Length: 208
Image (tube, rainbow, N blue to C red):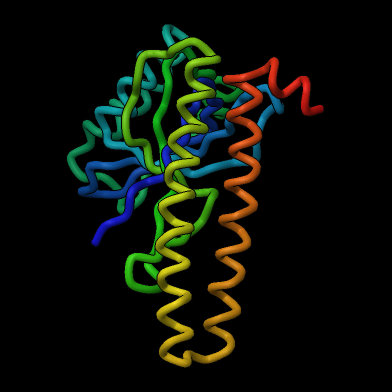
């Protein structure tokens, strides 16, 4: 059974590099996320080629030299096994892309039946490019989706933990499952507080 992605929504990114491999329909962007907390560390963003094109067009005329470099690679009779475009070498700075909402998610791996955990939070898959909505609407929707996913994951993890106990599993497996449960509970509490802060600011003020 497949998992339901924990979608994240990104409105503003800096792109440092575009990488691709021979005979692949996808590319990897090295990006930094720009938000109210500043600029993040690097993330790998996996995209389809048409998504890369849409992102470059969204950047406007600043992306023209990057588009030219990409076109030169794709027009080769024989591409190298790995090709890359260092945007800093071309523009002298990262490519700034904003104005759209990127729906992304972290790939997961299954550690037990229907129990999924993030593989690596620095690796993101671009699911869709959406029109940018108002900040309040996006924030509330992001948290609502994340909260539902965490509640679903908590329920699955608890059922898995109960199965392990009934099956008298090894202590190490029980401990790993307990850590997942604690992590779920912490995330649920944090997301609930954030959701209340955004949707019911007057209630939040009385509690603080």
